[in-house]
Structures are given as C-alpha cells and as structure tokens.
Length: 300
Image (cartoon, rainbow, N blue to C red; front, side):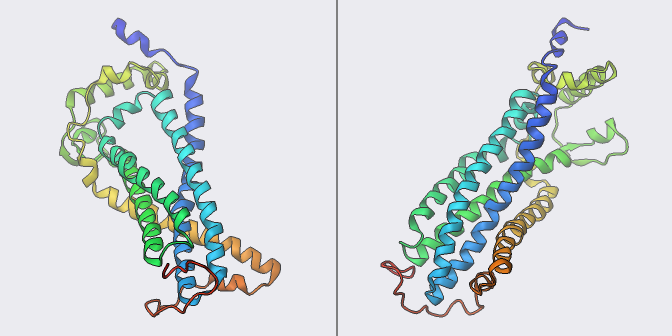
C-alpha cells in the first residue's frame, strides 16, 4: 500500500459524530424549510382578504405569522449550516461532490436565492400594514419565489446524488444492474480511483474511515468535468415539484390550518373559521376604504 494512503486511517471517532449531525440537521432543516415555504401562502391569502374586506383580523394574524415566519427562517438557516458543517468538515470527501456536480446549484442558492430571500423577509416585516398593497404583496410573493428557487437549487444537487446524470455508462460498468445516466461527462480516471479506494478499504473493514480522510478527495481527483449537467438532470424536475408541493402542503395545511383548527375547537370562536376560508374567487374587485389603519394596504 502506498505511504500516502496510510493517512486514510484518520478521524475514526468522527464517523458517528457526522452521522448524528447530518441526520438531525437534515430532518430539522426539512421541517423548518417546509414552514418557511408554506407560511407565506397563508399570509398572502389573509392579506388579500384584508385588502378586500378591511377586517383587521386578517392583518393582525398576518403580522403574527410574519414573526413566526421570520424566526422559522432563522432556524432553517442555522440547521442548514449544521448540515453543511457535518458534510464538509467531518465528511471532507463531500467536497468531491460539491466541487463537481453541486457547485453550480449551491453557488446560485447561496448568492442569489438565500441572500435575496433573507433581505425580502426583513423588508416584508417593515412593509406589512404600512406600505401599499402592490408593494407589500409583491415583496411577499418575491420572497416566497426565492425560497422556492433556493429549494430547487438544493434539490437539484440532491437529485444528482440519486440519479447521477452525466456519468454515462460508468455506473453500469461498475454495477451491471444500474442503467446509463446521460452523457459521458465524468473523469474516468477519478471514477476508477474512487471505486478502487472504496473497494480496498471496504474489504479491509475501514470503508467509512476512508471517507473521513482529509486527503481522500485529493487522491481521487477532479470528478465531473461539466458542472452544469446537474441543472438539466431530468430527475431534478420531478424531485423539485414533488418536494416543493409537499412543503407547501405541510406549511399551510399541516401547520397553519392545524393550529387554527385546534383554536376553533377549543374556543368555538367563528373568527377562526374566517381565517380558514380561502380568499373569494373575485379578488380582482375593488376594495372598500379602510378605517382601521392610518396607512391602508391599498394606499398610503
């Protein structure tokens, strides 16, 4: 065995730590993200109803849910950081994935979607109940769209892990029961190095230890030569649609509707029924004049 491979046997105690961090981090992050994507839909419905009816009930609950939304967004960012720390620091071989197939999606997620969403969340907190309807609702919709776009970029990287589009016939050559995955855009030498290293240390009973070596990635080399391919992965579209629609349903139906329904059954107050009803279909009609706010939603 070459001397440079001896350093594979390091960080043994971090294997269990990385598993705990990534498992809890991913599941908690998924819950918070579902709420972050679902809450704006309820807030949008209530603000439209306040705009049309002038009933302060909808504005007050929109403001309350806005504060919950902001706290939930912060918790989602924290748990997302925990996941990244577990993957990149304790599992340094993940850099092999993030520097090839996940580089473009995660770059756009961090620099465009996440930062833009964070700015708009703060701006919406300032705007709600103070600015015009077009501005307030526009900020909310834009924040929701950027949050969904952030989910798309992350899910694109995740979809590639399940369906490695761009590896061509390499997976089939290594495991005959697998199909071909798109064009041949993988570095064959790096793939063979990766397979040989994992096979060698798995047979010796140290496969997971090999994955935690800081030098493992450099021993493999550059993996995917075209980092744009994951963005056109057919599986990414299916994964994104399924996951995002599930998040919307969990955030609105699983959290907001459940909380309000529980309040109704405890108090039998009809105001909670009003909150559960969706906006009327004729939302394009003009709204009556407001007297409950010095700066009504439809005008300063």
